Image (cartoon, rainbow, N blue to C red; front, side, top):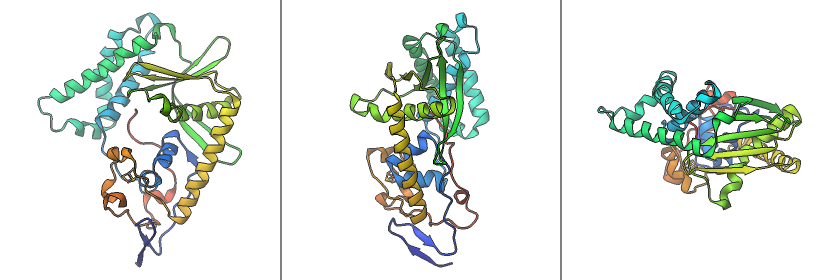
Amino acid sequence: METRTDGTGSAAVSGAVAPAPPASLSPSRASDFMQCPLLYRFRVIDKLPEKPSEAATRGTLVHAVLERLFDAPAAERTAPRAKALVPGQWERLRESRPEVAELFADDPEGERLARWLGEADKLVERWFTLEDPTRLEPAERELFVEAELDSGLRLRGIIDRVDVAPTGEVRIVDYKTGKAPRPEYAEGALFQMKFYALVVWRLKQVVPRRLQLVYLGSGDVLTYDPVVADLERVERKLLALWEAIRLATETGDWRPRPTKLCGWCDHQAVCPEFGGTPPPYPLPVGAPGAEGDAQGRMGRD
Ligand code: SF4
């Protein structure tokens, strides 16, 4: 098999297939491409494995607890009850994703695990200072949504909570276990919410009245009331992004874009910015990424 090197440092392989351009986008994958095209490639096309992180796994656990709490009658949705759900949900998470147990493989006494679970407790408890679940009756929890735009691009994602007022007004809520961004970065945080609002608008022909980000890490709530022009702008942005991804897929020009977020990237060993060489591109026939887009990655933030 003959190989050559392309402009991004990848070894290009003759006799290989270009992967199919993505047919769909989720907020996370769209954000990946905006952050660093090469990171998008590693995640969606090469499907390189990533280690579970304590923060992302804690996010998944806390999301599960907040979702399950609404199974209880309204009056019983208290902080002690929510915290009592943490151990059971952790057990379930370990069963469904055995790889998360690796996080505490070097913790035989269980001290780090106990601290980590205690932090999850604190995040759950803080939620009660921000919202009152005894007064909420979500229309949907962990709702998978998917809508196709006129261009053929499918948008999809999972909305943490959808509230519908008696008047029919829709509120989309997302929990974040991190801290609220500084005001100058709020637009980036709202991108995901506007993405969901666009999907809901396309699906139900209703513009959500309010988008709400609940930051359990810092105890902040960020809200935004979108209008049609906001959602049209997001749609144009996503179409431009989709086109850029399509072009990169075709040309193999997946540029690394180094930022301080590289510190959290699992792929420095194969990133030219850190002296690494990406896997060959296009992909060898039969490689997993040759079949197209991937959406699901572990962990919630
Ligand atoms: S280390 Fe930085 S530049 Fe390299 S792939 Fe990861 S995010 Fe992109």
